[in-house]
Amino acid sequence: MKRTILILLSVILIVTCNACANNSVETESVVQEQITETSALEDPFENAGLPALFSTEGGGNPLLAPFFLLTDNSNDGKNSLNDIPYELFVSQEEFMAWIESEGNAYLRTPQTRLTDYPNFYSFILEFDIPVDKLREVLKEQQLIGIENDAQYLTDEEIETLCSLDEKRILEQFASEYTIVTENKGYPPSWVYLNPIEEYEKAGITSDMITEKVELFSVFNYNEEAAKAFEEKLSDFIGYDVTIGENSFEKE
Image 1 (cartoon, one colour):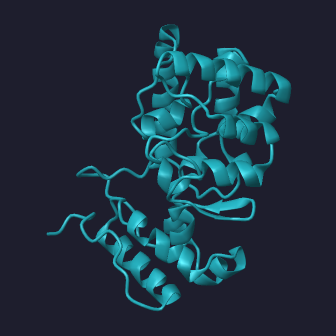
Image 2 (cartoon, one colour):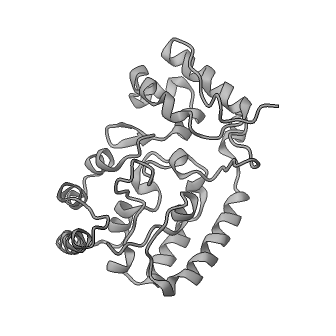
């Protein structure tokens, strides 16, 4: 299936994409500019008095999409809302203007709504893609994917997208790292940033957190951040947990 991966997230997630060759030069330039700008953004965790999350050395990287966003490409290779086949609907110029207008803060700030950052769902709403056209194009791409043994959206995924129901779409496409309640999702960064009182307000239960502890441990936390996260989750769950035991560099 011919597919153009959302420019920023393709770099962050190190995803290989089959984009049109004539897009590559402009794409590289925009990505470099936006990553440079992102590095200068305020750190919400530092502002909240929390330890810096990631080391910038030894493989650490603060630009980890699964940590900040509700959707990602790491869920066992399943389709992701981070894949935006924009060339099937709008021009590159229109798409790039939208991406640039979104800014970069969403790459350093926890997101809870699909409408809060660039993804296929917010793209559909932004460009007011008619449902009939959306379904027709995705069905055509599905046939191409089947014929070429490539990735494609299933009938269920297509109908879910065409429903334009944010809750239903989030439940279908949420990252395995994201906790979903109603029409909102809570990625690991939100859980780290917010006090446990906010967990309860969001409808997050101890069982939901328990299910994610192992997944939360895959990120390359600094040692202080890992300990702070452990203490918060342990207080909420009611027993000691370990986060990122092997993710930080030991002296």
